[in-house]
Length: 313
Ligand code: 8YV
Image (tube, rainbow, N blue to C red; front, top):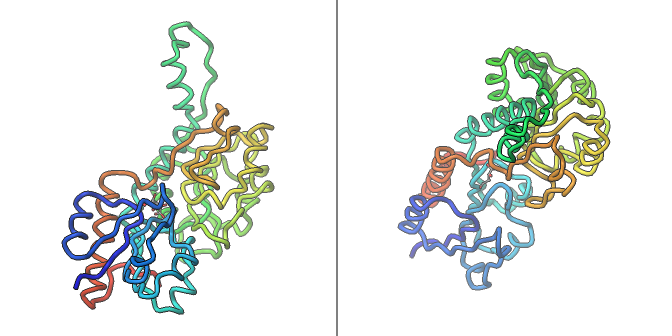
């Protein structure tokens, strides 16, 4: 008999077809409908496919007595209780590496868009204000500026590599100084924010990093600073960010992620100092195809009794 898998978020037509070939797949659009897994399905399900943003709430996990694997289409695991999965011997897999260049590219795009006012200037052209010879303020140079990276992991390092191509002076903050790292380490996040023009957040989400970028950090970045977030909205105290943008104590923000997605504070939507993206860091054909492939291969390997390719340790 084929194992039953509950798929809570879409992969790709190709990956879905591969799952259907091997498993009995029950599809529920959890983004739209919540975790509405019927009881008889919950009793039998052996695997879950979910996204980084959805995870698997503890109370849903508790309804799945035969659950053996959670395959995350993404790298975020902050919405999965990993101590509970470990206790129950449930395998958790993610899709590391394959999305790194895309998320780093997004960070670079947001740095450029934020500093060069790409979105506001686009609107200026479309609204006929160029043709009407309206004055347009100058933007800010990116090349040679000081870039602070919060969390120099795989994505942070990929952002640094790209930023070096723009002659940016890179420094970073994280839990520890990294051995053999070419960039200066700053043990205090407010001090890093004070010392840079652009602060990019690439740190993991979850309770440990919640509101790491608080009012003090935002104020330290200051009225000429740009805050870029491609990690998790929870890392930033969004209420403090909204206030700082309104009071112009922060120069600008370029954000791919928000604290209560898909809700974006109206004050950020209304601000010309802010560039907004709907959590699109990994949303390229290439990354999503590779992520979906990894999800399927992890499930296939696991249920064939082999080691999954990319388990969370
Ligand atoms: C995806 C993400 O948007 O990797 C993550 O944790 O947030 C993103 O890459 C999401 O998981 C899509 O399924």
